[in-house]
Length: 106
Length: 379
Image (cartoon, rainbow over all chains, first blue to last red; front, side, top):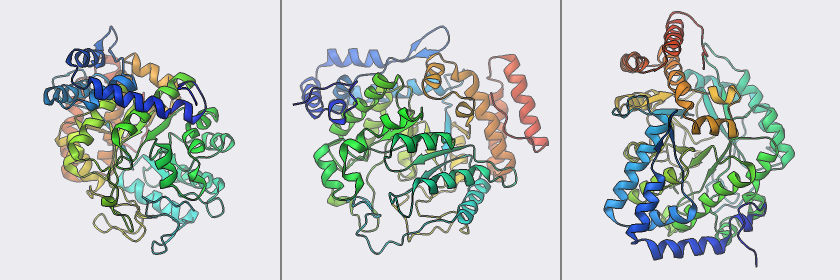
């Protein structure tokens, strides 16, 4: 038996099957837990700082809860925050205009 | 030489022609790409140590960087080749590559082994630990991705984020990019034989959740997806698009924008528009198409790129860099209609640069681009 260890250099310890299965179970259990989901959404929102914005990001555990949630309002909120995050890092000074910078690759 | 069951290049497929480009042919491809207006490109190659050793890839990189057709210039070569050794990654780094991209395909070990029944890619641990070796070899920017449709998407999603967390925990820097490819129809491959295909809504939700979980990564969507899907995902966190792509070996030189060779294609391309059409479409939707490669060339890679990003500093140079590289494209390659929309956009956007000094320099540089052959300005 291996243990989950994100710092390990062994594939089966940092991509730990048991941890993924536990994550999926946790997500399934909490996919209608609106209180928790609200906290997760709040954590994901970009926060204004003196120089710009910062984003906290989400762990695989809580991000999986969002992915499992089927509530249409929550899904719309996820979409909204995704766009806000992109605006925070790629937008111009005017955040009213939806102007993003795209990098083009061949 | 791998037996990947989802890819038409699998070694039992005797009907798909195999092809290796000579350096002369590479040069012709690069000229064709430069003439379209590309500044960044990705090298893709199958795994074959006899016909396709690392030395061949290194030679191709050297050739690509050496070609300067008209005002053309390839400024960043990203590489997507099979998992290899620390020593080989170091050689790629020394050759000046941008991002090293390697898709996991699936994080589920058993499925992975079944999907790669033969060949060196069969080794799950060697493949999964490749990014650690790449970083040990000095490559700061690595690109992750899973092929959605092979395993249950929720499993893949968790695995992908754990991989990102692992890179951050061990190397102090997360993935530079995450790609979100979906399984597509191809020669000798029928996506219906895979039960885990995902619909457009699920695909959108996965992409948005990745954006929330890994806010600083570049999310890439390819021409596998059609215009509608690409339009939608651009609002949900996607930050890089490919344009005018061909998935066949040597698919650029000697073909017009309308005709594309199909015989060696890896998968169907849904978005078949030319680069100029894609650029125009982005601008019409209020997006600024950027051909910028400045960060990598100013040494802003890995954790230096991430810390700039986290301090909001990217905004102080990304915006003018995007406008300057867009101006190069407009001046050298754009159609008249793209040029008209583009310069209007550049003019408007220049006004939004907050620092007077930066704005003045950017304006002067864009004037120089229009009035001379001076190129490659950057902050």
